[in-house]
Length: 245
Ligand SMILES: [Zn+2]
Image (cartoon, rainbow, N blue to C red; front, side, top):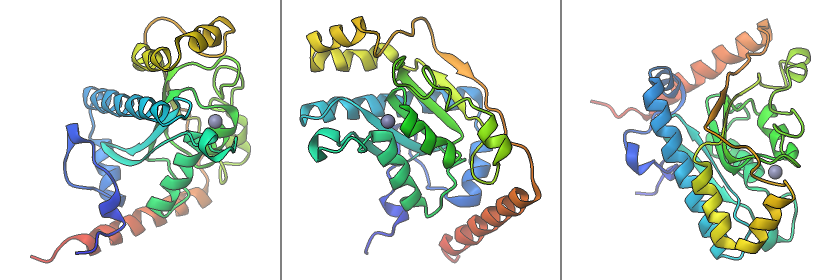
């Protein structure tokens, strides 16, 4: 049988289970405990870090990003800057674009994006515009980051003034599996990594994992209707995909 678009969505091996799109995915996410979410976060980030190592072996810089909806991987992708000779081919930007295509919608508020390096300002803007609910990264980026340098990921003004266009402030997880992510850069090029760190470009954040809570955008009637419509569309989609008894 020809695989459908949904069949092409990868599953996390550690957490294999039925694909739960749309409305049921929202319910499944709501049922996750803190421990379950933490287990998923670690599995996803580990997978993202492995992808960054694979990218380095293909001559690319070791950057990768993964977008998940609950325990389901929607898309995982590495930088293509070197291979495409194009500075807009950042992993996070590519992941956001592909996730919208796979899910068939602009709104990614039910998703988490995992990145081995803190998303830059350019990528962070696309994260805010698609309303991604959670952002987790391993290594900080004090010179270019959309969190450490420019507060794109934590800015409340854009979502307060334009709640129809921008998502609320996402939950941000800083330093998740940082040492494992740094080891990939060390293995890629020890000298380059030492210079990068000495210049303070990447990796100045020390200590344990930091969690910053999300800040929802203001409620509006327009948004309420949009949310109800998305839930209804997901419910209809689930009903159609359920095989008859
Ligand atoms: Zn970027």
